[in-house]
Length: 198
Image 1: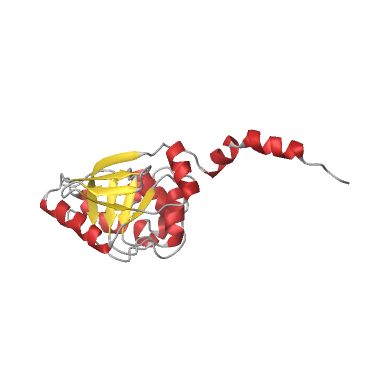
Image 2: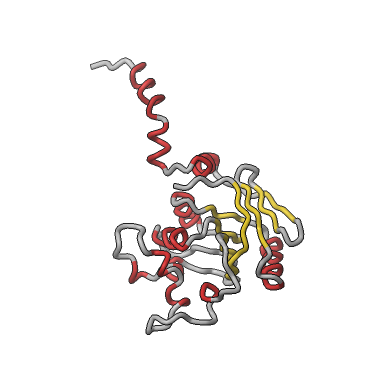
């Protein structure tokens, strides 16, 4: 995975509450067994017409908005536990998703796939949406080491929580297997110190 420490970006606003994983990546795309191409189908039913043409009124098809930070309404990632939802978000190019609440399984899937879910207060979330509506070039800074998110349009910041283990993995660009392999020497040393009794 790519290392994550700090990013400043314009945001893509999705002020819709209760976005579930079937809306993030519809079930018909779940046949694939690797992550390739999932970003192309992110929010497919909202993003494309039945003939495959883009829907002009959906935010991902609006050239006004771009960036590596998706800002979503409350309760993002609810529904089924499909990891493909995190694959689609990561595959599209989002590094951070900001919301006032995430479904737990989605949150863990995102962290496992190099996407940082940042929980903010409802007031802070509203202020980001307001700033983006006024100026699509307004930016947000997410500092993983300091565990802060800053709305650069007004200078306000909030702290966010993250599991210490997942924080270390993101900072070092490690998935769970990479992390385990990074501890191989310590594991072998511990195993060598154990007395086996038969």
